[in-house]
Length: 410
Image 1 (tube, rainbow, N blue to C red):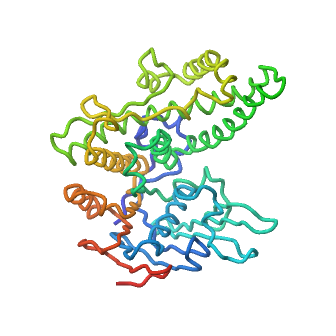
Image 2 (cartoon, rainbow, N blue to C red):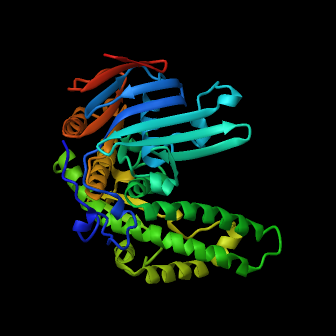
Image 3 (cartoon, rainbow, N blue to C red):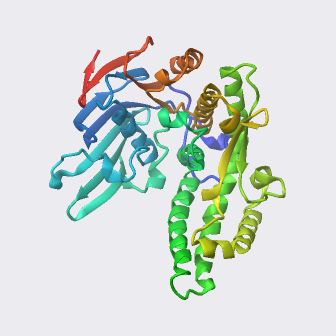
């Protein structure tokens, strides 16, 4: 079913509260219904080759562990996000045992509805170590590639979103924003590079005679990229917060109110993240620079940057109590599921299409009530890929047994 094509210029603001002038990605999205119609793999993980036709509705990949089910979802998410959510480095996705001259992994996806072909190539061969992203055969920067296939992933790692490290919760926000805001994705990439360079210089203060003004250039770059990241996260949280609260109430009626809070040093004594969400870019940059001056001695002593969005956290509370400390295991998993369903709504509201939903062996990790809630989402969603060790009692459009990197229709 196709929705009428409708440019985002028809509305004044995006789902994350950003104006069209603030979001450079807005003109690239239209209200169309798109799904992944074919996935092809070459030398990816345990797949020498795979050509998988896909259709709207639910596709189930079932089989024993370590057979390649999750690898299929990882490949799709690579097309969506430009990066693997499992690999520490790009070259890890290349099939183990491939000859040195053939260490090249290729993931290709055909999008029905837009007729685009997306491709990510990772090479690690003598004289060639690279990752390339292509659209219809033309090379693209990752900032111009990410978001063409909106996707939301929910797997065992996301079940630990509540109790995991702050980096996992920052990654949750970054994942949603990177697919819907290319300016954010670019700023995040710049910030990561600048932070690394700045930290190296801070470490050098203890090893050689470094003049403090050597930091000025990196400070300016850090403030510019970091201010945009902090601002967009705070504005996005304004939209995400009620969505997550509503999903939590649906999953656990009467289980208390889920509250999201963004912990940051910026405007900490002047309204916190709500002030950050409303502040101008100039005010945010000034606040950031003030904190850098205040913490300069500590940063030099520790040899690392202690101010910026890389130190922030997403705080989760039910009726004012931290879920991480006071929530039961069931409550924590309910909150994690509510956050992912809220992300699904957020991406859909921003892109105008239902993102592809990737469910990696989560049904077995949830109790019956939460499995039922997830089944409702699956049945009402445009396209879902679900992995499981046992075929679930679901009305699937297609089902495949996965065994040693081979898919057999069942």
